[in-house]
Image (tube, rainbow, N blue to C red; front, side, top):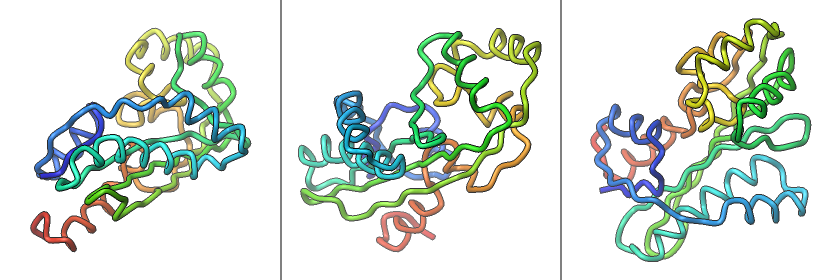
Length: 196
């Protein structure tokens, strides 16, 4: 059975809906320190997502070498910077105002650890174009969706009202939700872990 090194409700739902047997356990890593170190090195957002996913997989994978441990992370890249989850409604407003009328990228990384090391990894990327968002709509949007959107970078959930913020999306839906599910399922089928 797969171990998901996360308590993310959306990642758990994706695996449940795909009928992948798994156990979810929190992987407590110092994300702010890892992010700060990678930012100081000028790491690309794709590499940051990959490193954070691997840190989570490694945290549990080294304790459970006989299990497949999946670590995931998602990073929003915008104009060479990385946005974090909004900490307040004002922060969410500022993020959406910055993204309004612009294109940004979501990088969703997944790494599987087994037998003491990484055995599989994938980083999916999606490009999202946010429509120009009016001040009136944004105020109502925040009132209706806060605090739920506090758990999402960029201040939106595409699977909910956040989809109304966008004029164009290029990329895999599951990648946008936070896990490259199709690539993961393909790997698990090839390994014989699930039927396919």
